[in-house]
Every structure is written in structure tokens, then in C-alpha cells.
Length: 110
Length: 244
View 1 (cartoon, each protein chain N blue to C red):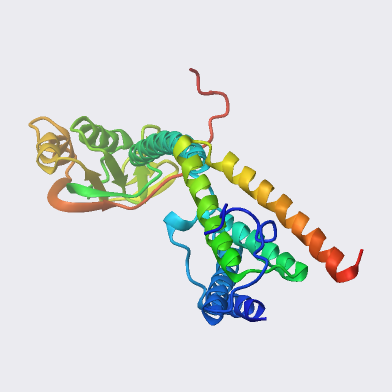
View 2 (tube, rainbow over the protein chains, first blue to last red):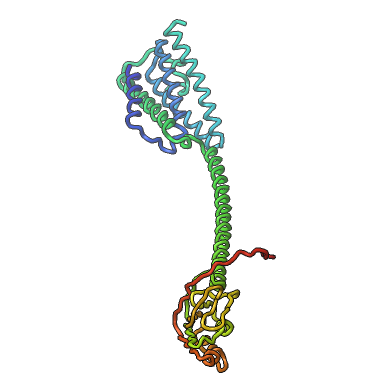
């Protein structure tokens, strides 16, 4: 509950404040958002499975974001930044779809 | 610590959630999801309202910059070409204006010499009296020829503009100039160097002497400014055509 409320509050805050993204953060923010979404979907699935652990969620959230940003950073340094970004997005997208499917089975039994 | 941080939370769940620090964990989760929502909103906003370039990577930006530079070079080249064209057109325009001015000047000069334009300038006013009606058209033509010989550029005889084709007829008292009958005394206005004209008329044995011999007087008045106001129209050449 608190997560959903905080998510909504964050969106509202972002819409109200409308901050400009710093240049150095620009390549990482979309990847970080996707990674965090993956963590959130994973957490939601774990909760529906009844095996949710706050610590696991927090650690996975932070590490997901960090590793995704690191991969993009490394890719930029190696000159394959755009390809690695695509790779990260694809992998995280697949995971999100898998988690979404599990959540769907829980919610709709189908 | 968990075995793998990147692992999905559901893959390696803790069988039993720890009760201690539950509030701290909830707060942490709240902060993280708050950040996520904030990030989503910011990114969506930056992506939709920001210009298309801000989301691009360095390589793409360099490519775009190269394209823009090439385009700017092309446009600069175009500007230079067009400026060159402009200069050429202005030059030709200047030339055309100069030619037109020259033609205008020439037509004015010719108009004065041919008598189609009024003229003004330094010159003399000559009065020839003929109380005995002795002067013939030929004598008066001599006066005009003397003026012309002395460099008169425009001559008016009474109310007639004298040109190359002007005719003088008459046998005393009245002279017919170009078909216009003019009685004595005759007034002649000539534009030219006043001193030279005066000298030419009063040369010993010249026209002044002829007039005096006929019993008349030839008075010359040198003036800073005389006006030859009478004009004549030129007949269009009927047979002659310009030859190159």
C-alpha cells in the first residue's frame, strides 16, 4: 500500500516540480527507471506469492538500478552505449513481462 | 546480504520476514518507489517536452552536428554566390545608369546645338539698327556667321532660333528668317565667350563696318547671362537612317 501511495506521490511530485534532468544523468535515467520498474514488478509478484521480503526488495531495487546504470556507463566508455542500453532494456523488459504474467496468473487465475 | 542483488526478489525470497525494522523497511520502500515515480514523471516530461536532441547519445549528436556544419557550409557558399550575383547586377545597373546619364547629357548638348532646347549662359546681346533699310539678308547672315565662327553655341535672331539650316532673305528693312518676317532693328542673342564674340563682330572690316557703311549701328552688349529661350522642333529624317 505504502509503495503504491509513494509511487503516485512521486509521479505527482515530478509533474508538479518538472525538474530538468542534469546532462550527466540523461543517459542513465531511463535505464534506471526501467530497472526500478523491474524490481517493483518482482516485489509485487513476491508479495502475491506470499514470499515478499522488504530487505530483498530494497537491495534488489538499488542493485538493479546501480548495475543497469553501470552497464550503460561502461557501454558509453566502450563506445557501445546505445547497444548496451538496448540490451539492458530488452532483458529488463523480458523480466517485467515474466513477472507481469505471474502477477496476472495470481490475480485472474489465468 | 542476499546471494545476488540483481536476482529478482521472488526468486530467492526469505521464508519469514523479519519483524524488527519493519517500519524502517517500509519507509525505505516508500522512498524508493517515490523516487521511481519521480523518475518516471521526470523522464516522461523530459522526453515529451524537451527538444529531440536532449535524449540523443554523443555519436548521434556528432553526426547531427556534422550534418548541420555541412549544411551551414553549403548555405554560406550559397550566400557568397548570391552576393556575387548581387554585385554583378549592381555593377551592370551602375553601367546602365552611367550610359543613360551619358546619353542624356549628349541629347541635351545636341538639343542646345540643334535648337530644340532653351539655353542659358554668358554671351552677347547684339542690336543692329538699319534706318536706311540698306541691310540685306545676306548681311545679317554674315553677322550670324561671324558669331558662329567665334564659337557661339546658341543663337537667337529676333524670335527665331538660328540653326544650321536657318535661311535669311530680304532686301532691306525687313528680313525673313526661316519664313518669319522681322523688321529692323534686329536683335540677336548669342551664347558663347562674350569677349570673343564682341571682338569678332567688331573686327576691322568686319560686319560692324558693313553695318556702319549701310548707315546703321551694331551695338554689342556683353552679358554674364543671356537666355536663348526660343526652340524649334526637328523634322524626322525622311530618307536618312542611322548607319553603323
